[in-house]
Length: 295
Image (cartoon, rainbow, N blue to C red; front, top):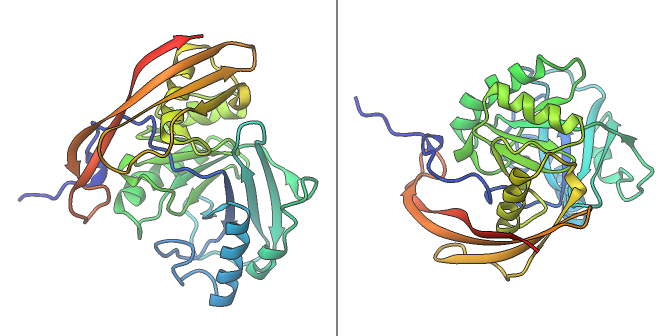
């Protein structure tokens, strides 16, 4: 019997340059069932959801729902809210505790002294209502990864983008995004983050950087010893990249130790594939480094 391929069955698309672009994150603990996204009407009362959405948009925060692996429909007592900034040089993660979702728009996230400084957290997308690949491949990864850490630092999360790379892992606060990682690789990635460095295993890019910059940074990180998230600063020298068609760009990657690299990046078209399970095939591109030179 012919079986329709899942979107994550296609593995010829290179990972670098595919991370969702977000400068910051608002992660809300929610153990109830999730809809396709946080504001699909299944999580928040309409007026509360609208207030949270405005609150996040005004601060360039991507809203994610999070829960402990394996937990659903749990008690609605005190729960955590994490606020992360992922821009290089401004990386931070703070934790707040709420009793009611209506308290979220009043959180003092604009005050750098508010909230409790938090250690890195790992988010694994498991939102099956958005794409089955995230549920089938994400949930086992989240459970196995969480078993290695005593503290609640590993969370299932709602849709992050890029389910065709499932299982998808995001490490906050830096916003480094990973795809197609095994349980062992995910632990390597998260252990590196907890030690203050960045692993390049399955690395798609940093969320605060556009695709050309993501590709350039990954290439440089693969060529030097591991370093901390903010050791490299990326400047992209081109304008917006077209959604489809030929694309290229140049980025400069500077290390805090004074070294710098000029990286040329180009995209080629791939055979159309399903970007999300159940959808018709659509165009895809492969980002590749065409030249890298230390300057």
